[in-house]
Length: 377
Image (cartoon, rainbow, N blue to C red; front, side, top):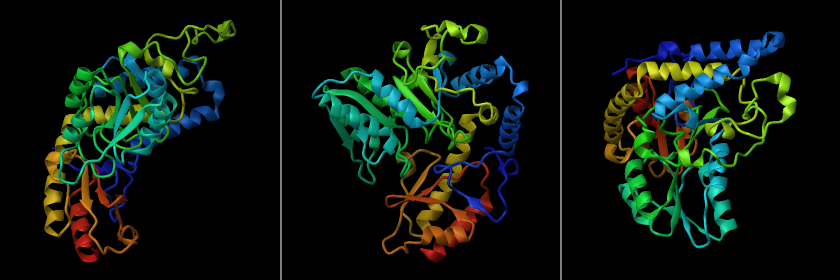
């Protein structure tokens, strides 16, 4: 168990922020690192060629440790949609085949696949998971010999319903389907081992459970796709890019690995230091310890929420870091505003109240949540 880490964040005592699934706060150390990076650009004569490469190389290697793969399989991207679109243009799809997804999964993980299905005269197939039922089994039943791509999360962003990705991978192998993952709502808070899950592509945006700055993220590409087609045709991903004096030679050859998928202006002198700082702290805590701590807190919290009449997703059906609770019929429309006025910050997606604490929370936050919800719902 990791004790409350509120002292590492700029969170006033009167604020109970339980909304990591929306956006995490930045640690004070991350803010300092970003500030120092931004100030470097204020005096560009101090910028060296190494600034375009060293932090990027470091952050690629750090993230690779989080998901247990080699650094060469990791690309730097600005958003989940960027990485998922990259995956979509690199995977084959024939007429009549299917792309399997969860109903209500995040829109950025549906738009590229809907477009690809339309263009290929294929079928975009959404799996609806009823309350109280396991998402994994429903997805397994939807994947068949016609399935070309399974495009899934580890947990559904609306209520935290869990998908067993190892079992999904096994089923994909049986039918010859590719597995593409948006893990923005799980990596950093759940142990995620790509050597076991073996996705073809996977993306993670940093601004939620990775505790990093907005517009930064990662794309994983499996070995068969390391020679694929990138979205951009930039200079920095090419061999010889480190020699600024000879960039006019316009090398067409990419650096080895997933570097070819890196976004333009990936160096991002302001934000990359913040990403490094955040990942180093996550590694210092240990993702397994983060998962255990959040899981135990959330089990206790779910018991208390159920006790005041809120129906939460059972622990065996959801991610340990994620609570979804059904909003009771008749609840006032502005109840989230009322909670915010009292210093409690949550979110609602569909009919699910989304409660997603992190290590900055403590028992005071949980007590305040229960007492306030008891009063207004």
